[in-house]
Amino acid sequence: MSVAVYPGSFDPVTLGHLDIIERSAKIMDKVIVGVLKNNSKTPLFSVEERVNILADVTKDIGNVTIKAFDGLSVDFARNCGAQFMVRGLRAITDFDYELQMSQTNRILRSDIDTIFLSTSLEYAYLSSSSVKEIASFGGDISMCVPDFLGKQIYDKYGIERNEPEAME
Ligand code: PNS
Image 1 (cartoon, rainbow, N blue to C red):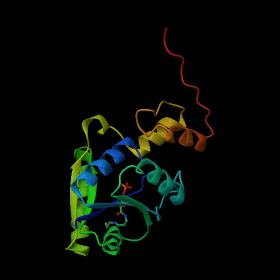
Image 2: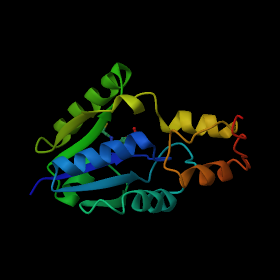
Image 3: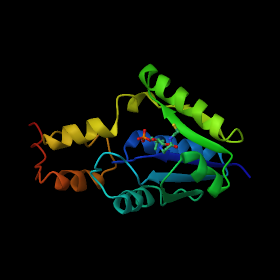
Image 4: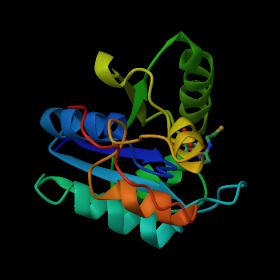
């Protein structure tokens, strides 16, 4: 049985992450999304909130489960019985970091391989950081995150956002 973990911060999950989850779930028998607990930065959403949000957005994908983890991703993968780690590649700017991380992970555990999925073009510009920046200034994030999540993100910044009136 092919098992993959998809580790990340998911603070917050974006439509780009969701695209990678959906596509890896079609390739693998089982995908476990790992939400990192020990971020050095203070996250916008607590780990419990991120796990719940991810569980909600993936509830219709039968072979996907969500777990929080701390420590090394390779240890999380081993504990999950995974042979693969999935990561999304948006652009060449991701490549250096992702290549280095996958090679380090292979030094740590040679039996776990990283599989890179290229992000679908419509999400290539998306990142959790830009979503947070746009939302913090009250900008439109409806094209970045699942529908129900927008309000939760604005709430974190104390922003009450009224959708602009449709143009006549
Ligand atoms: O969504 P992100 O923030 O790009 O995800 C980064 C993540 C969580 C995959 C990475 O920081 C990670 O694996 N952290 C756990 C510690 C670890 O295993 N580091 C890799 C060895 S250098």
